Length: 81
Image (cartoon, rainbow, N blue to C red):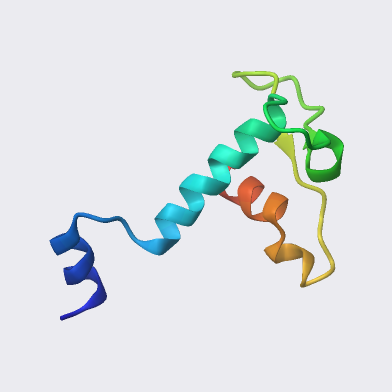
């Protein structure tokens, strides 16, 4: 039985989707101060104000280090862009 068939049989989402969901929840908690972590250690707010939407747009500086690309903040900003 394949992985997708087992997930469907059990009514679960994929591991990748579950990780993404938990990462986004943790990101929300950091941005809005629900957890006791420094926002500036993980994210920067975007200085672009010409776009529509909310004031919590996250900025992603360019990343040279390949290890940093797998870091929590880098994964999140890539997802919500």
